[in-house]
Length: 374
Image (cartoon, rainbow, N blue to C red; front, side):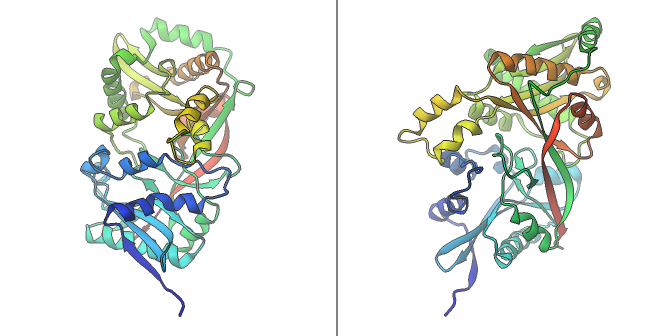
């Protein structure tokens, strides 16, 4: 008798481990997939170690074919989003599935049902667990591994999700630039002089005052990004948790603040692409993975420009161009000659224009999908 597909809710540590380990089997043999550290994944799913989960409940589901897992999904009741946008949107994330439309449908139905029970009328994703984390479905650019905190998935996911009636809610891009291709306008020197004449100075992140500077960065992010599509404010607790994870690889001279007479008015955050070092580890630091990691960290040759924001009243002064030039200059000192700028909303024409202005090229496209579930 043929075994049927079933949905199983994750209710204990054993099933949570199965949830974490399923992608390791799904992506076996895929040269571009970067396995997350298993220990970090365990912490990510627990409210005691993930500040986001303290106020934003999730429910995890597995799709099983007999005793074999063939898919997983997280349903995310993102109250931060609902408070910000005054809607009843729910989210799905951590979606992984074999190429089987029935399995994908059952996973989406399970997430939709739980979210509907919790008052949601729309299902959007993928986000893990919010747009401030790893978000979006990769639509093109499958020949290169993802950089740090960017999504990766098989090409067939698009057909599965669109086949289930989801439509694109928003697209966004990853741009790439290298030392050989980057082009700054000839007037960049005069522009920086003009900034100084207007009382604007740029300083780097101070690790000795890390909590203070992270609080400044979070405040600027929440103000500068407030009008962006899908924006969700982040908290200092979330920022400090991210800082703790990334502190071993952070380069303070790749994080900048623009200040007008001492008042912070803009920031830029770039981090080394730690995925280059994680990729060979297969998700395991022990017993000897940490030694390999220490060696690999020294060989990282790319960064991701992760976040940048300037307060509205200072956006036409060229602060963003100054940030890019200083980031490139300081990256060269570390032997880093390539950068990805991601992600950039399709609707953010100002930022897309600046990146085209410095000769950055789109290398990957992502999308968030949604459909009504009421």
